[in-house]
Image (cartoon, rainbow, N blue to C red; front, side, top):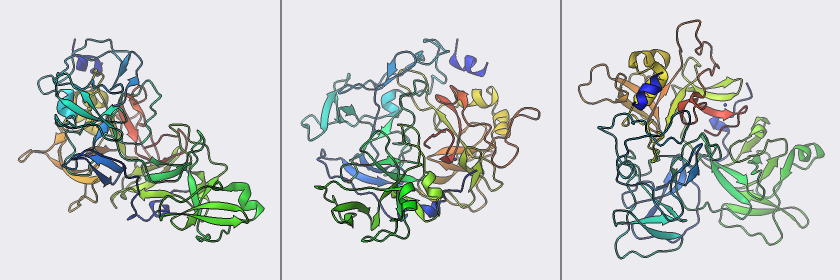
Amino acid sequence: MRLQTLLVTAALMPLGWQCLAASPRATEDYVRVPMPAGVQVINTELEGNVFADANGHTLYNWPLKPMRVGEAGDPANKTNCTNQVLREEGGHMSPYPPGLLLPDLDTRLSCAQMWPPLLADKDAKPVGNWTIVARDDGTRQWAYAQQPLYTFKYDRMPGDTIGGTKRDMKPGVSARPAVRNPVGPPPNTPPGFDVLSTVNGRLLVGANTALRPALYTFDKDTATKTACTSEDCLREWKPVLAPELARPTSKEWALMERSPGVRQWVFRGKPLYTHIPDLPFRGHGMSLDGSDVPGWRPVYTQTTPEPPGELKRQATIGGDVLADGRGRTIYIYFCQDDADDQLTCDHPETSQVTRLALCGAGDAARCLKRFPLVLASAGAQSTSRAWSVRDYNPMTGRFAQPGDKGAVRIWTYRDRPLYTFDGDPPPKVGDREPGDVEADGLGQWHGQRDGYFAFWLRDDFYGRNN
């Protein structure tokens, strides 16, 4: 029996892009580390600094992950991404048992075709955290921090990160697939700090505890003086104090004497604080309630490109989402198949069988009615690497080829089409009013393996990190 046969059966004060603490032109500093010849560091729009091959293509790893049944990914110093084209799904995700034939086998790629390994020359030797692992075909592959490295077939230009994200996508949840992650050098921060990728930018957080609180600055502060000294202010805001032996790691960092013998960390000319009422980061959640307080701003080492002007921020019961010009929630589709190699199935150049089964029981026309595409206006142009206008064939679900009848121009994010949700005709459920998010998590295991997610700009209810 073929798999497709079974498949068929962020209302709070908005955290606007103008509120981001870092200049949109600022980029994140990083620690210079030894690298093999041919490897470089590239600053990307969405993921900060990443390692890239000689052609500028982002490098990814594929960490081993426990699934509901078995595991997938690469263990330390070993690659499971081979040249074999898999024909059957692996049974890692109930309710489907192993052995079901995968869709579109005539065009299915091997893991190594979709994720080409970063090969090492025969004379290459390990350097720093870079090691070399042997592949089954006799070639040698570079690994970083014991994880084999790959590029992604559909990254077109240097700095693309279409293949994956550093954003925390609930790695401990067994319903999530084994995803690929961009790999890069560590951010250049003093001990006790870390940087997390979010949909709005690379967020500076504390790292001394498991709570990883977001860090803020106050508009009224200067590099040498704080305006947060009253009991009322300190009841809500906690200065980030430096240990006695602490020293700045770069020109971006400094220390301010808050009171005799008490020093506070300063980043890019602003003292740092945590917001005491904020909910903690617990591996997959986030809280930025402090950004609702006038004059206080979360700190980003660099921000992501703003969405196109045709789209806007819309408040919902769960937080703020990206919306079209009418305020209707925008969704993006996520999918990785359940074969042992966990291939991407949400890019327009990959199989569309799973998406069509989910959104329209295999009927492309029904899918378009339930999930209309977000069309680009006449004359609209791509605004960044992340937000691009692409010609798209809505009946095949692929990027359009010259001469395709019915092709439309759509907005994409990381090359993925954007949708709204009309649902089925009443009384079935669909988004009827601005702020509705009825399709969020629609799919297998609440969309964790394949499904539609609202494009959360700030999710205050579930704590998801887009």
